[in-house]
Amino acid sequence: MDLQSCVTIQKEWDIVAARQLGRDIARKIGFGTVDQARIATAISELARNIYLYTDNGKICFEVIDNIDHKGMGIISVDSGPGIKDISQVMEDGYSTSGGLGAGLPGVKRLVDEFDIRSEDEKGTEIRAIKWVR
Amino acid sequence: MDALKLDAVNYKELLRHYINTQDEQSLYGAEQISKTFIKNNIPPEEIVNFHIQALTELYDEIPDHIRHSMDFLLETMISYGVAHQEYQTLREQQSELKSEISVAAGMQDTLLATTKPVIDDLDVGVISVPAHQMNGDYHHFIKGKDGSLGIAVADVIGKGIPAALCMSMIKYSMDSFPEATMSPKSILKNLNRVVERNVDPSMFITMFYAQYLPAESKLRYSSAGHEPGFYYDAESNTFEEIETKGLVLGVSADTNYKQYERIINKGDMIILLTDGVTECRQGDSFIESEEVLDVIKQYAHLTAQELVNGVYKHFERLQNFQLRDDFTLIVLRKEV
Image 1: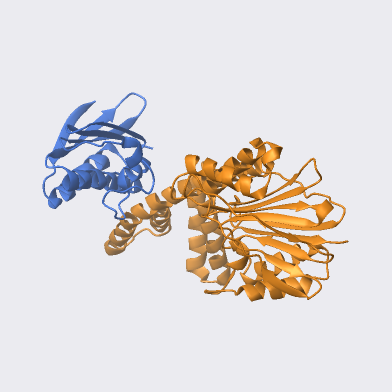
Image 2: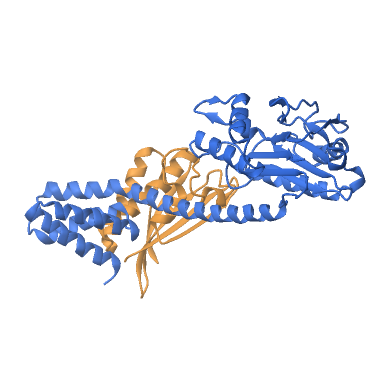
């Protein structure tokens, strides 16, 4: 793994910047149009969570280039309130914003690998990986 | 070739055919292929992508604005795709739940099983149908060593699984009472204590308990706030409500229940029911209890079992085959 680049999320506009950077990286790695769009949507969801629920967070990207496969890591790190019940937020139909957002289960569906770590009052780190098909 | 590529090839061929002919056959093909897409779990963004690929392969030059508009369309489909996947998962979960509940319902049937008693001078008809899979109504027949017949009809306020769970408790409490205490008033008194101790205060159970003594042609009964049943007097050809007083089970720990009795003559009927019968609704309005009696009269010439079946079918149809509450109806007719 190498090359990490990050976008700090403070304003709603930063969500767009994160999408843009993520899509550019995805295109360079060799993702097709559909997967680029999925990656951008996943980034949106993660960045929106930071924007809505925390004061301090960023979205980082890493290029994964193993011998057998290429992929992209999307990492969301924040120092917000943390997620008390991860199983609950990973349940379908559960959304704190009550809106139509795909939520974290949606992000999980858009990518190939998904992992959350969260500590109460300390923050949350989400790592998502999409592999080139 | 994997399924995705095969779908893409088929889509391209269909599209080409349609662009050349604009015939109905290709549109029928489109309908079929979209069903295949659903079956193969192809998300909408992938279909837009098939379209873009097909256009690129069929035509050397696609105007930029068309190509960009297609990319834009693809982007707007992503969230639909995620929502569709979520819907698939929920559908699977729902069918798992359904089968789990049907196992529970089967278990309930076994646990609460009661056999219709055979008593020389009494024609008994009984039907109990749950509104959903599990039944919150309960009825039970107990034949005493002295030849008497105990008949219990109960209803948990509420329906579905909580009500059904509650009913199992009632049945096992009743099984544990010694036969010597089997008078209606003492059974209700004992059950009331059990319910008061073990059931959530928001849950109430009503029960009618009757005991038929064939030797004396006598019926003893007590009620814990249960929907009143009816008595049919054959001689005067009239129905009357069986009037009882008694607090629903589980409200106060030491409630005493009043016991009533009456002599049953030849041809007389005792009709016991739950509010699923009297509160049948036609559209938005409840039916009147006279209506229940009218329907019973219509079938009165039949055997007790045919009678209850006929009444049930009548109200099932009246409610468009969707019961709103569990439905239990018991008819006892004295034959000699």
